[in-house]
Structure formats: structure tokens, C-alpha cells
Image 1 (spheres, one colour):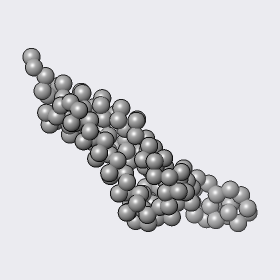
Image 2 (image 1 turned 135 degrees about the vertical axis):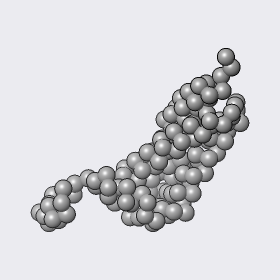
Image 3 (image 1 turned 90 degrees about the vertical axis):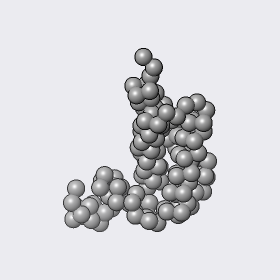
Length: 130
């Protein structure tokens, strides 16, 4: 939808349309962006975690990482990157989103699932004993 159509809709008193993918992506990479929609920011956190889970799963699989140490490092890296992103880079008021715990829980288990699948696939295919 063009900006002119958006402005007309807002002037008429209609609800503003949801942000486009490019607008959300732009905000995600902009420091201290203004998040008008609470769910939009939480969606960014969710998808950032999914991408992080995929990347870490592939890296852990390429490296011969095993056991509880790999799991612990995954959770530490995932939580630290998310925490630094929303406190230092975006500087959002965490109470507006239900507190630090709610933001840190957003998408963690689905990210963990993707991580495990890719870690197992890559590790098994590259380091399996024949």
C-alpha cells in the first residue's frame, strides 16, 4: 500500500494498516526505533530467535559439539543476544511488553526446536561413525 493511501486512511479516521515487511525490517535494524505496535516488536524478537536457532544449529553441527555443554552455550548465546538487542540496541521499556522475562521467553522454545533439528542433522551427517 502506498504512503498516500495510508495517509488518506489515517485522515479518514480509519485504523492504520499493519506495517509492511520492509517497514518492520527497517525498524528492526534501526537503533532505538519507535514501535507503535507491541506485537510487531515481539514478532521481530520471535523471528530473530528463529534465525539465530538455525544458524547456531548449523554451526554446532559443523563443529563436533556434543552434550549438555552445547545446549548450555545455545541458551546462553540466545538469551544474551536477545537481551542486548532489546536493552542496548532498541532500548525499549520492557515493562511495556510484560517484563524482561516475557521478552526473553518469546520464541525461545521454537528456536530451541529448530536448533536441535539442525544440530542433529548436521552433526549426524558429518561426524557419524560408519
